[in-house]
Length: 96
Image 1 (cartoon, rainbow, N blue to C red):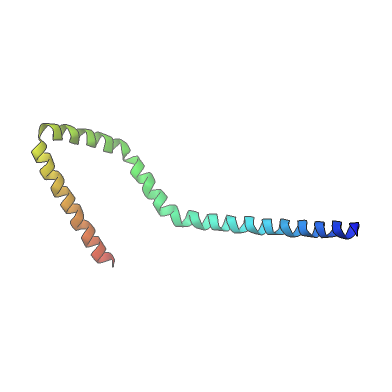
Image 2 (cartoon, helix red, strand yellow):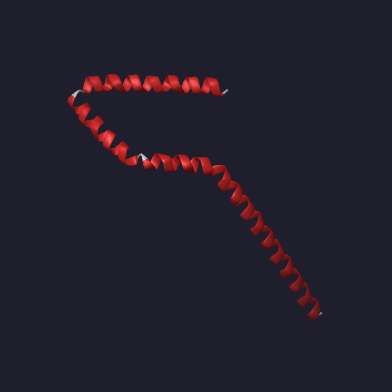
């Protein structure tokens, strides 16, 4: 009786080890698939990060301009926002 219990435990251990191995293989395949799917987003994010110093300089210049000419700055900012809205509408229309 004791040896059959030991045999059952060994068999159960082998089954669990095989299950763990299958899960590891599945996880590896899924992680590769995830990396392939997110690769364009990662490239886009890296591109944005390369423009970070220019964005800091540009925002500083815009702030100085806004302090000196607040009405012109708000007028231009409204124009830029409306142009961006038009571009987004056109993109959505053409994309569908």
